[in-house]
Image 1 (cartoon, helix red, strand yellow):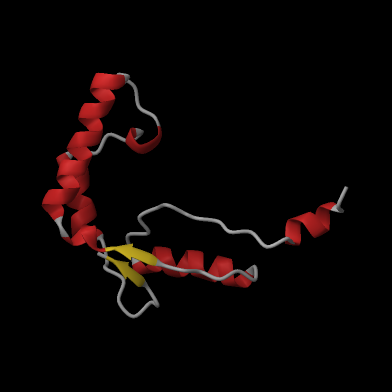
Image 2: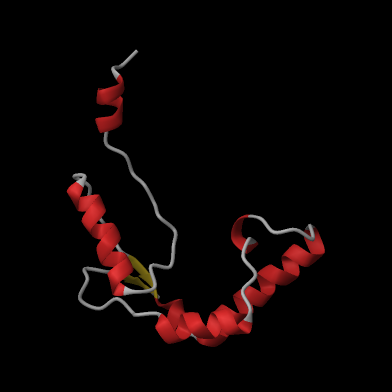
Length: 104
């Protein structure tokens, strides 16, 4: 059985699926990843510029949750109200010049 330290240093691929809504959030995570010897790749899904599409997705997830299970889990664990969504839109900082890969 490999030594625990060797196991801990084995290369890993980790995906953080989180909004990282502000540049400061992204910079904080990038600093931690790079300090630990990792490489950070920022994917920006340009859907965030389409408020209507995001609202439709949120409403769709809520409807699916209500019909299928009546409970919150995974993708729909957080109740996203119009107020929450409006705050997100108001504070989200689109990545520009951060080495981002833009997905349309």
